[in-house]
Length: 455
Image (cartoon, rainbow, N blue to C red; front, side, top):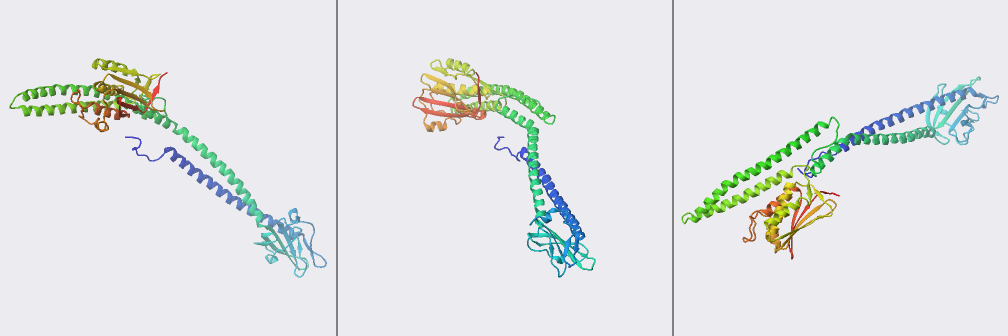
């Protein structure tokens, strides 16, 4: 199954990161909300306690003069009540007498209706500089007169303290959240590193850059790695046996098929059985083609599934060219190698069969010369070209050249299976075969996806 068709349920790293992010968000959010609520409640209680203390202190210090005008024995202990428009105010009033106000209250006045009994009461009302928390009580003078004691603090003082704390807490909580997320990401990366190495090892197997998984893995993954290596070893042994069995099958089929063909030829030479003999010959030839094609297809498919197979070029090509020179003694076979040897990630048996087919086909059609060239086609691609100086092909012929049984000239020996087998070999190796016809002959170009150069 290819990577594109492999079902995926998402990234494991992303799942862990989302889980950590959700946990951090809930934890930090809960701490932030709880801390701000606790602080707001605490500072509100502190303000109310402070105002109660101040209103009682003011009640103790308030006195009536001989003229009935209120005055203080001494200033309040908190100097903010004397600072102009500081947000801290007090007021003492007696019905029908001038009102005594704190030095901070340069404008407006406080509502003395809050002071209606000896018990302390409080409300939030409009003060000299905005909404204010106001406390009030009634103090009875020695002469029986009622002194209305009122003290107030701007609501903004409380709100600013809460806002300052909330801002500072938010900055610290956000910094802590970022640190926790970074730590979580580091832990996730560290924890998933063995899986990443396992993925890289499997990728190297698929690219035929290794024949087993190497390295040490945690105890949770080590059994999987061991099983994979055991599977690879067993698969390699199966492939070796399958190739031997494919060869044995070919040998066992060719002998009876040769007998059938011989008998069919005898029948075709007999006048009464000539038509039957020709039919048998035709079917026997079709059987031979199918057997050769399917066996070659099976051998290539078997080799394509074995990881870690590599081929050194041009070392592999040299003996093939030697065999072609003996098979086609009237043709010249030349090799144009690279500056440095290359290690191609393909099965050497499959590549040998592929090049043998293409070189034999080129030798049959070439007038005098066949050339093989190697080149680096891109950052991660390697190409082999087999060029002959024969008549070439038309575009219509190129389109049908890889079909099974295609044979353009009966005067040239062949079975019509070579290019079909070559096409399937390329598909199994993950490479591409292109036929390019020009005025100087036909070029078969094979492009491989992975290689390494050797210095």
